[in-house]
Length: 94
Image (cartoon, one colour):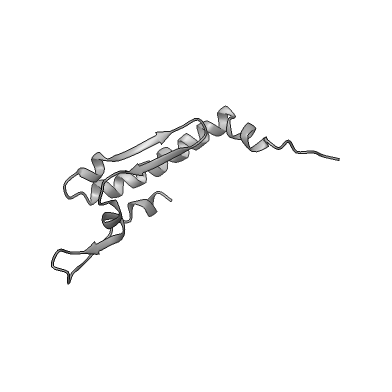
């Protein structure tokens, strides 16, 4: 009968090859996010606040602009009548 160690997920997550593959995948996704952000830049603030963080077992792309939700998903213009479409940079990274 086979048994599975309860910490198998942790063992696998810390394997060098797995960690390298996670970083490679994140780099590709981060490039897609950056491309969308750069193509739609208005002030450059969102591009300046785009961060890639790599920890021991996982990585994240973070958009840290205070208006990131409105920029990504869309918002009403200041006139209150015009819808401004979002750039959907988050979705580009998925």
